[in-house]
Image 1: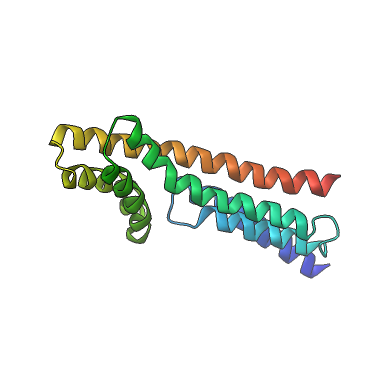
Image 2: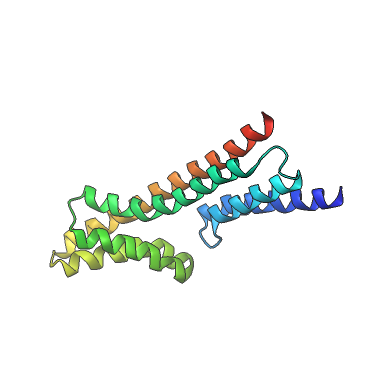
Length: 161
């Protein structure tokens, strides 16, 4: 009984921290939600939520990384930016993670601007690409939030059925 309470408590903490981590990207949001859901399944001996459900949730976890990487690049593409700007947005988003919240917020912008300047575009176009990358990042964050809700939803539906 005590182990179950501890696991459920840790699961709840991980899931809540994971959702916070998507909004304030200092915490690894999606992995924390996944860990929380695995702990919740473990708390009940995987009786209700088993391996296949956790695999589906893991695939959704992987999808959050795809959304994260692609969102900024698609934002950049929308304003007619160069391929270098699209790659810059992807690289900036990825590298930005290692520089805390400032890097996460500025990475897509800086990467897209750098890509446009490498492509020998003017500063105005580079700025547009940077803003588009940042908007793409925000849209990607909303997409990740939706995927996290889907992860929890899959767990809850399986648990209740």
